[in-house]
Length: 93
Image (cartoon, rainbow, N blue to C red):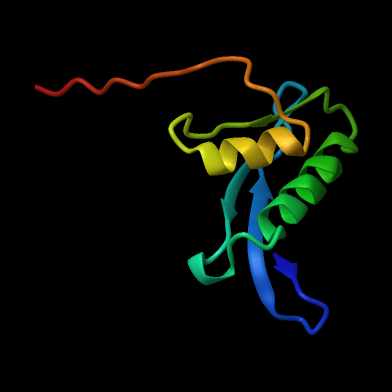
């Protein structure tokens, strides 16, 4: 969780355990009424730095929705770059 100096939680981000030298940043969230203040960028950058310092980690990954320019701009400003585009298909029946 990311907190203001008075201890109020304002954003969150998590990460997976390392697998094959990779850590995935996930669960990035800021409540709607607190967005646009830099909280998501700050918590994502810190979680990413901590993941990169983990022994044996060679890559820190973050999956995002390409249709969301706000989050994509944020992630690129803190150093992430698009490298792949994935699609998931579910078959029923």
